[in-house]
Length: 96
Image: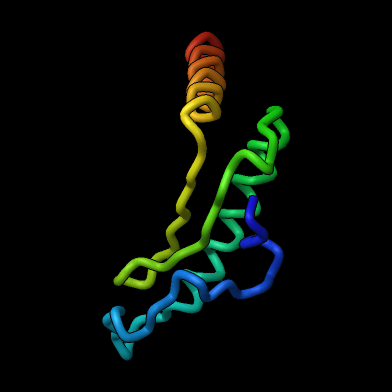
């Protein structure tokens, strides 16, 4: 991962002049939720054997204030994640 979940703000991709800010929207709550989701997803991917240096997770906020997580990974790692998701889906299907 790129350190997004370590509690430090990374403003490299933030351009306040290109963002429409709505006064009544709580962007901070969405940002906090996205940071927690980045940490959760990063931990889960690491737990199943994905090398954390092979993924890039970024917290973001949608226009409505909801949290967003941006995931970037190589095609090889995407194939691995897809295989893990299929195995999990098959196990869940078999259990029901």
